[in-house]
Image 1 (cartoon, rainbow, N blue to C red):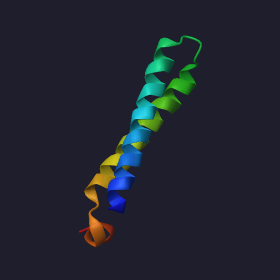
Image 2: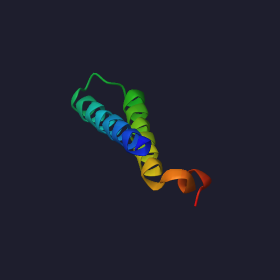
Image 3: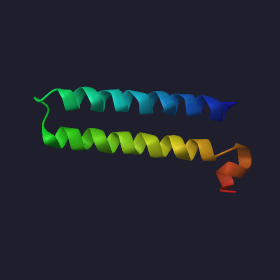
Image 4: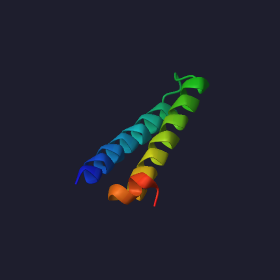
Length: 64
């Protein structure tokens, strides 16, 4: 049950990161460095989400 809540939270964070990146790409006032930071945040959020989906119960914590 807790894992489902974590996955939902990470999905929301991933979606928010994607939205932020999309809006920044349209705004030409955003620096290139900021765009790179946003891209990195999207990648981290996606990796966190994938890792959370892999873990299931006690065996997931042990890496099995």
